[in-house]
Length: 238
Image 1 (tube, rainbow, N blue to C red):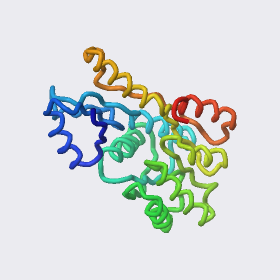
Image 2 (tube, rainbow, N blue to C red):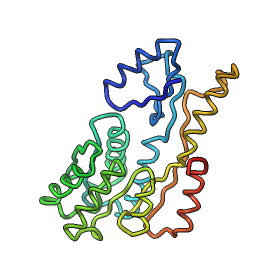
Image 3 (cartoon, one colour):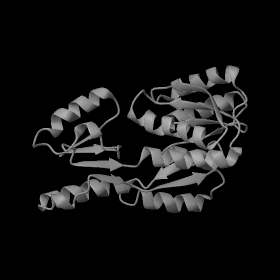
Image 4 (cartoon, rainbow, N blue to C red):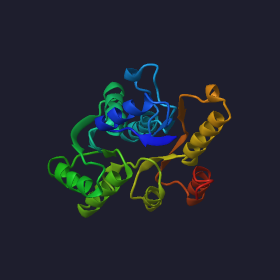
């Protein structure tokens, strides 16, 4: 069994070679949308937390906070699958459901420093923002640092993505407005159960896709509630 991810085109080419072989059996992590181009020859399992579902939870939060009006910016990661699913899906959702206007977008390579620099750059021309939509944890922290430096932290909202420890601390401090926390250990359990079923000769019982649960949390949540969610999310690995 080989656990792999898919984000850029070169990953796709490697995976195509592997899934056409009997062994190893490929588990694609952090992707829950099967590729049509592979037809009936698919990986053993797609597993993760649906990027679009999580992103739309955050998008709907911002819609509620802004009253469907105002300007915003998007900080992508790399030009690949994750940015497309987390970023482009949110932009489409805003365009369809609101009068929110995207005034700037940047690719940051999921790098905190690049996100910091991008935020400083975009705010030279666009200080009238309701929020900055960040596609990952490091991007969010970079944006928050820039906003703090410019004295705009309490005027422009920033989201996290994933709900790791640093994001939860930022939520409690009031630096970050919202995030989705993944019930993280569901991911590992799903892979382990799929492999177990396969070893027992029950491959037909293994689904093609497993998508784990996510919870939206917002600034103002109590530490005890965060601790309760986090305990469930990391019930085996913590």
